[in-house]
Length: 286
Image: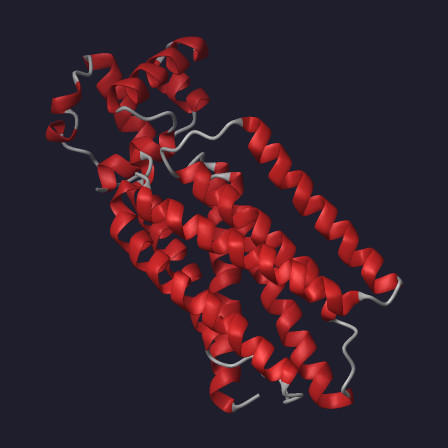
């Protein structure tokens, strides 16, 4: 690995780890989804597998980590469309999701079996096609469907990433097979770290923006709520929701029961056209 590759990998590792930590904080505050965290974590596993494989091949020319790489590729192929579907206004029947998850599980088990019975090279083609199809399909969904309101503010960035991915992913796969077929030494290169840096950087900034809005010092103005027909009590609760207060804390602060708080919160989300605090917060951000 060149010095620039090492620097890019360090930046990618740092950003992904910090992003996962920030996403867990947002998830605890009901500002992030499980699918997004799973997607980011699968990227971390993939970049770990690629790094370890690159170092081992240069030191001892062994390829014992190929199975690990393929397993993480299956995870990325699984979590990418699930994350996209979670964020888009596109209804998919649960049976299709179950079939896709079942296919991913089958590939996962097949890779393990291939490693034991020494036919792993054949699985490389299958898993690569699965990942390529998964990513391209996800990017097409981003380009052709509308996002939920909670991520509306980053729609332009998402579409730019979709175009970049539809170009970079096939290019990376082609270069990978070129090196394999020519028996050349395969390096990580610049493409994968850059993609991971851009992806994690975008999600990091998005979650950081959400958390900054939840700062207790923030005092939303009346005009933030004037177009949504909130009652005076709902405005009080909306103010506290923005400050990151839990339902229990709101109940104690306003001397009302917990079910009443939940009912008011549901009404607020309905009037804002969202289903959770994450969507409510995102509208205030945008």
